[in-house]
Image (cartoon, rainbow, N blue to C red; front, side, top):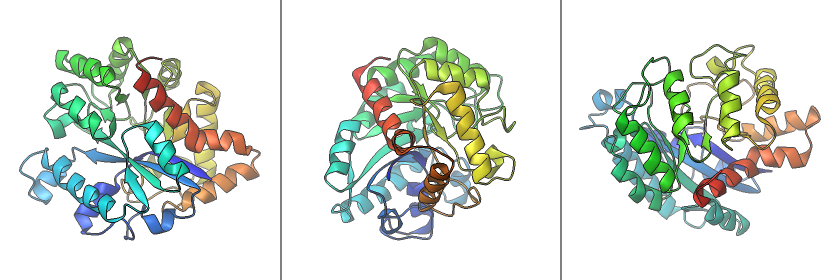
Length: 314
């Protein structure tokens, strides 16, 4: 099977634990990912406010600078197996050559001071996604559960991000900010790691209207493996229920995987790390999903989204 996952917090986990990418105690490492026929991963860099006090970060910029330095070092040391790339085309070429590919995302714009002018240089370094907020309101927008929309700076951030070929990620936006972003977006948007609010009422999940609107932009939704977002038994049945709801509302070309590995203290029952993707794939096969659809959900849809945004249109 091939996998292109939209969101993991492994870079931060490596920095926090002082571990490496080849093998570690988290959810994602190269040894355990070796079963995949092709693997591209988007590594997130989060404006985790707790890190300021817990780890002595001078400011939110350290939440990008320090974990990114660790991940870059690990990519260099494991260059025979995984390569930092800047686009979907480079990722596909890397996978075709038998190597894993790494792309990056911002999870909360505080890590760049909410400054739109800092987006283009990051895009050149392989940052392909950006969320405006994490779990707190900032100078750009309101986060999940907030009644704030987009500020003028937030609208400028949207324009600049899309002009440089970066995908706007709505996974942590509040409802008002979501709709204001949809209104001003001129390229596909995505939710890298969110589930369905109709099935589980957590505010991090998206409503049916939001899911339809996101798909209409040409975007994709990444299925999140975190049990509090799934509800039900927090197991494969719950995951499959969310996936089928997404497919019904959004269509087969607008769903991908965004497991949130290394960003959760617990994953859906039956998934303990990156190898759980194989078990979930097999579960879906047993329920009648054919290999062409599974390859689209697990790999192709996210590649095609990045292609579309890099071209500058829907």
